[in-house]
Length: 214
Ligand code: VGL
Ligand code: ZN
Image: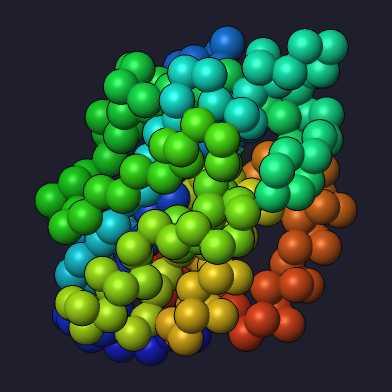
């Protein structure tokens, strides 16, 4: 259990709460159950947590992670890009499209920073901290330190991709890191999630439930 929340040191990091991952956008990257995380996150935001950060997947229309940019390839194929292995996706999270907006049902009253990621055409960014080349920073760690955050609770879309990559980086950057498991949506098979879960536990990430934060 995470215990009492501190108004400055504790922050909720909401990863990619965007219609592009929901049934609202069936031709983008719908994730089963993704819309269901919004009310759970709103319940956390109605509780003692004082501040939140939201990320948005914010891709160039011809982003390198889109299968549409790789002739002969299909979504979910693996390719090698300049920086290494990359899963290809259907077009999604295209900057300034309706699907890339913050979901209109999300309570933004405690949201003090919106961080857009994956905006470089040639580099994907699952993590809110470091792009998939593993060297280009987003500035989030520096921002969190500047405002006094020490512990982050992470919720959103999706495990084991953006949520888990964000959590692993948060822990490795020295933040006390918790994933709010029932406030996240899963993309892909359960065994891939189990594998990621084990890696996060090794990295020192802990897991909790929304009820522990309300
Ligand atoms: C995500 C795949 C591609 C995510 C983003 O938010 O988990 N997954 N882009
Ligand atoms: Zn993406």
